[in-house]
Image 1 (cartoon, one colour):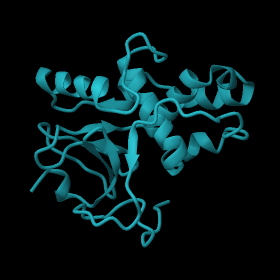
Image 2 (tube, one colour; image 1 turned 90 degrees about the horizontal axis):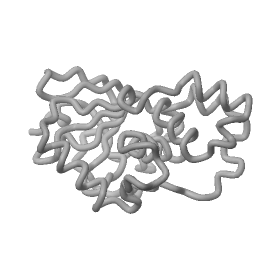
Image 3 (cartoon, helix red, strand yellow; image 1 turned 120 degrees about the horizontal axis):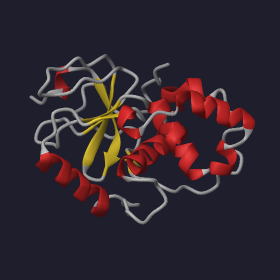
Length: 195
């Protein structure tokens, strides 16, 4: 049994070939595994998968996504104040718990080759961790806004002018797909979303 299977969780989608999980309870793991609050996301961490990468602060990732992707909107007075309140360094939003050098190299390779909009050092984000936060923040903004409710509710007309996806690196699962996750899929029509 994998570490994540010891906790109630839902499968959200796939980041490249790695599953993305939403814990339905706080995960307080040992040092050699990972910890993740109920409001976070975990990439990998299952049996035979890559060690877990934790998005500890979804609102911080959304703030990074908005700042990097729509700087003109992010500079508007209302948005600037809301985003500034949640803006963290990307490394404060992410936890590469117990990873070794080989884990980082394998994940970097995945991010540069196996996602729809791979990381490009010459691209729009201001570094690898910023690109990763933007990828995850865009996903939270559009697909799971309840994870960043405190930020998104402070934005006036948050979807205005947002007509192009930039990162789009998480593949969503179709509702009703049979899964092994002990909490099913976040998108299963039979399940109500958590508040």
